[in-house]
Every structure is written in structure tokens, then in C-alpha cells.
Amino acid sequence: MTSKKNQSPFRAGFVAIVGRPNVGKSTLLNRVLGEHVAIVTPRPQTTRTRILGIWNGKGAQIAFFDTPGLHRAKGPLNRRMVEVALTTLDEVDAVLMLVEAGTGPEGRVEVGESTRWAIEEVRRRGRPAILGISKMDRAPRATLLPVIDAYKDLHAWTEIVPFSGLTGENVDRLLDILASHLPEAEAPLFPPDQLTDQAERALAAEYVREQVMLQTRQEIPYSVAVDVEEFDEAERRDRGGLVRISALVLVERESQKAIVIGKGGAMLKKIGTRARENLERLLGCKVFLSLTVKVEERWSERATALKRLGL
Ligand SMILES: Nc1nc2c(ncn2[C@@H]2O[C@H](COP(=O)(O)OP(=O)(O)OP(=O)(O)O)[C@@H](O)[C@H]2O)c(=O)[nH]1
Ligand SMILES: [Mg+2]
Image 1 (cartoon, rainbow, N blue to C red):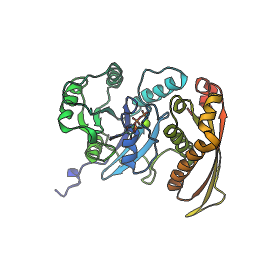
Image 2 (image 1 turned 60 degrees about the vertical axis):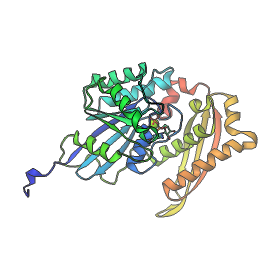
Image 3 (image 1 turned 180 degrees about the horizontal axis):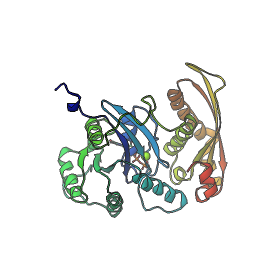
Image 4 (image 1 turned 90 degrees about the vertical axis):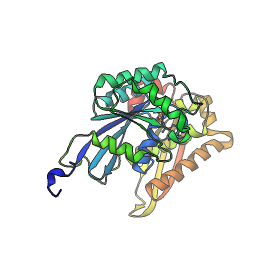
């Protein structure tokens, strides 16, 4: 067993993480990377762009694309999000489609119309597709089998793997399986120290948007965009120092602006404090974060605004 022939070959390639909104795509990516590169909230349609995250394992490198949730989109922003997810399906070596494990009592599992549509989109691409059953931590064991039963014949899945992005259960197994379906490669696709394609400036905008989505209700989370105007590293040092960040929090109506600012500025202060704390952890230095709320009517419907915001 000493000949090189018997060693498994190095494998590298792209994997798209797709699925309905809120199934845990971004949570899985963050778990795999050990960093918060994709924002996570309890609300559907949190992720708006595709996010590259690179995992390096023994004998393999997987370049993941986290994508916006697949749904029947209304409005230009949502249509754009779905388009990004569908285009990504064309550009990868393998697909990881996620569906949620149930929490309810044992029994029949109904697969919704939208999920069937999403599976059909995956099927049409003809790429190897692994079905990940997410959130297994909150599913009683007995409920997993009916879920697997409901999905197993809907597509010729390469494998079906229950896992939890929250606890990490079965994630190593999922990674091994995904790696085994990637092409053999002479070398990694990305330098081993590269984690993501997200610039710190883009992450800053996302961390602020995450806090707005977490702290506010109703339509606000879907009407907000964040535009970083200044990311000043002049006072940043090798280890430590200070980064000054100014960002615009865009909303679509005056009434929304009032909600985001809150009574006496309390809401904006809370959003700013939480986002700053998370940014300080990410950047490893002090952060001075200044937020301004601005009304930009119907930004989510205007192509120019979407483009400017990188959407
Ligand atoms: N219990 C449990 N909750 C999870 C798990 N993974 C994600 N969640 C929760 O599910 C919600 C949605 O998670 P996300 O990771 O944002 O889901 P997503 O698929 O990226 O959602 P979109 O970006 O909106 O498409 C959040 O409240 C997560 O905390 C898991 O493994 N177990
Ligand atoms: Mg997401």
C-alpha cells in the first residue's frame, strides 16, 4: 500500500448550497468555515447575494456558494435573488440542496409546491445533487425517516444526509460526501488561507443589515439596505487599532425611518452597538460605527439602486 496509486486523489471544486428560504443554508456555511461570513436571521430571504466560502480539508478543497433562498419571487429585488441562486446551479460541480427536518409529530410529510419546483430546477441541471436534511437537532429521530421517505423518490439524489448546522452534528460526514463528488485536481482552486470573497467593507454592511433585520418587525427587514460610505483603516494597526465605518441605512418610507431610529434614537443605538460588537470580533480591532438612516423611495424596485448596492 505504499504506491502513490493507492492514495486517494486530491479533489477540488464548487458546491452550491441551495434550497427554500430559511432552511439553514447560511448557518451551514458559517459552521463549515468557523466564521460568520453569511448573516443569519429567523426571517426568510435573509441572504441576498451569493457568498463564496472556502473549506480546506485533508485531501480536498470545497468552494461553497451560499445562495439566496429559492422562492416564487415578487418584485425586482427578489427576482434578482432567485436568478442568482439559479445561475449558480449552472456553475458548480455538485449541488447541496437543503430541506428542513420536521419538528412535528411522526407521520406523513407533505412536500410543498415550491420545494417541488426547486427540486425540478436542480434536476434540470443534471449535476450530482446531495440532499441535506437540515436542523436535525430539533427533529425527534422518529420524524427523520418519513422526511427521507417523502424526498427520496423526487430526484435521483447522490446521497441523503441529515445534519445540524447549529450543533455541527453530521457536518463532517456531509463534507466527506461532498468532497468525494468533486473532480480530481492537481492543486487547490484558492489559496489555503482564503476564506471568502466577501470584502470586509461588504461584511460591515451585512452585519448592520443583520441587526436591523433582527431588531425590527413587519416589513422593515425587507425594505432595508445598507450602503457603507466610509471604511477608514488609517488608524488600523497590525494587531488592533481602530477602523472607522460610516454607513447609510436605506429604507423605503418615512414611517420606516422613524421605526429604525426609534424613540429618542434608541433602536438605532441598539442596532449600532450590536453590529459594532460583531464587527470588532470579525476585524480584531476597535470599530467606530456611525449610522445614518435615509429614505430612498422604492430602492428595491429600481435597477440603478440595486446595482449600486451590489444586488
Ligand atoms: N435548530 C436549528 N435552527 C437552525 C439550524 N440552521 C439554521 N437554523 C435557524 O434557521 C433560521 C434561518 O437560518 P439561515 O441560515 O439564515 O437560513 P437560510 O437558508 O440561509 O435563509 P435565507 O438566507 O433566508 O434563504 C435561523 O433562525 C437559524 O438560526 C439548525 O441546524 N438547527
Ligand atoms: Mg441565508
